[in-house]
Length: 220
Ligand code: DX5
Ligand code: ZN
Picture 1 (cartoon, protein in one colour):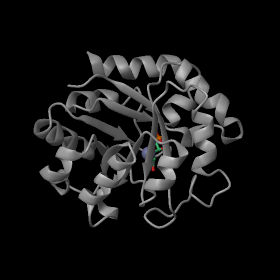
Picture 2: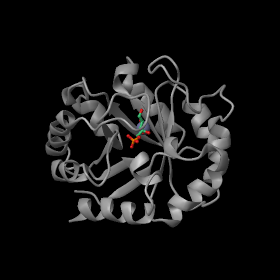
Picture 3: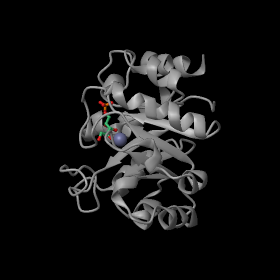
């Protein structure tokens, strides 16, 4: 299994001091930063969308503070150029939100970003066809319904991680939603190596310790 990557979801951070929050995560051991770009269509909420007061561009400038830190974007619509221009390093889209995932992955790669494919809780792992998964750089199993942070972890989604790990032993497989010290073990055992956590990290008194714990559980 590929090594552990912890990716704090900045959705749970203090947007009023975003740069400091991102720096704090990188200093605390996070490999990536996870940004939920919600569009108001696929999910009812809007976060840091193109026309929002905190657009991805601003987010990206915050990310450039630690230039060595890979950046991560998790978006629901075809905003490839906007996200690439903003400095995104990985563009993850929902399989349910596109009819042509292969063209989308090619477009993402053309803009020199890595491509991720996400599935919602009610979508089976088989919705990610071999020909799509093979050219994707990462597969994401949502463990809550996309739309907001702080939701309860849906353990029934975990078998999909194991199914994807069996099909793709060497690929990055991510979990996102309700993941923290109490739920990491089932994710790691199923074969997830990229761990997104929002509230579990940002609300912790010692975020550094939580990041270290998540990583250790994946790597052991
Ligand atoms: C949900 C988002 C998640 C969310 C995770 O739509 O995709 O990234 O921020 O937050 P927690 O870890 O609090 O469930
Ligand atoms: Zn997310």
